[in-house]
Length: 115
Length: 116
Image (cartoon, rainbow over all chains, first blue to last red; front, side, top):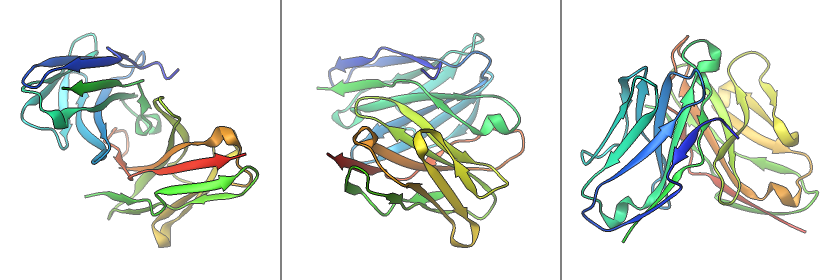
């Protein structure tokens, strides 16, 4: 158990819909990262938040957005869903400073199926 | 931009065979290097990491990796695999910046299948 929690575990929804994925980082970790894992794209970085502020953006579509709240949990919002958005979405967290900040701990993921 | 190459996409070994999975990265600066393992249906778990110092690093479950700076490589090894090592293995890098966490760039993964 990494200490990172994600809900829900599975999500099945229809095209055009909007969903919210939730992530709680390890206790004390200020950085949260979102990754998408799909068969054709592999593991891709989407976005990073640090203490409530967006720190880095990767291959995140405009239909997707994220935020990190004062209690440090994060939500990833996916809208106007398409079949190709079906994937496993992972959240990871890391400590804020020092060499321990380089290491990311991953949650169990949310499997999104768009039908 | 960082990139990571894993040349072996699917490896099949018999139990007790030795394992070496290749990983090469591309990045102009100093990097931190990681190997993660993903067992079927599970999340990513850190096997081992390299930040600095001894280029031969040992991780959990008998795995080790060697950082060869001149070859931009970080190959994963295990002298004798077990059936329970069947999983997908990912090499990853992030930029080495003091005191700042940064995104991981992953390779495409190597699927290891260990047969009895």
